Image (cartoon, rainbow, N blue to C red; front, side):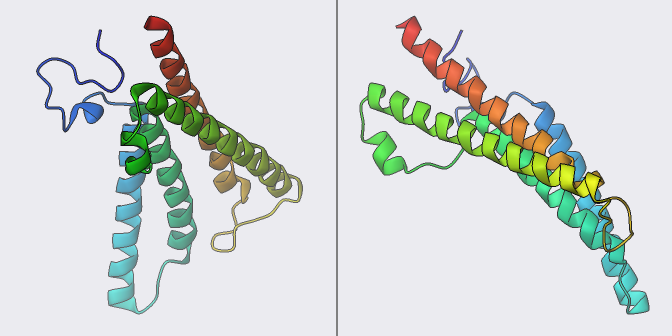
Length: 171
């Protein structure tokens, strides 16, 4: 079995992190397809009628949040989040592992905080029966995805943290 950052035999090392498909990839692709379709429909409507579909903006914003968090979860699972390479690469393997563990722990804390705050927002949207400005549907239909996906990103970071902890035990 290869280490989490090492490519499998016969896989190009430049694409190795993307060789394994995740559910997040499919969700992100579907969100992007819907986003592109409704944006294109809005452009066509504006071109021919000089008016836009009001509902496309609120759905687009919701899909962008979904897309951002799903991509963040995939990046966490693949260890592709940004970091200051100068500091990371300059250290020993032990230092790199500790920095990676600190980074994952910070991500877990940040996304658990986002989960808690967005859960509160979701509850307020539901309790006060807030409706969306464009089409008048309950706002919580859009808000529900924020805590769910924030929890997904935190879970992916916990998975990576566990993998890093096991690397230490294996040595």
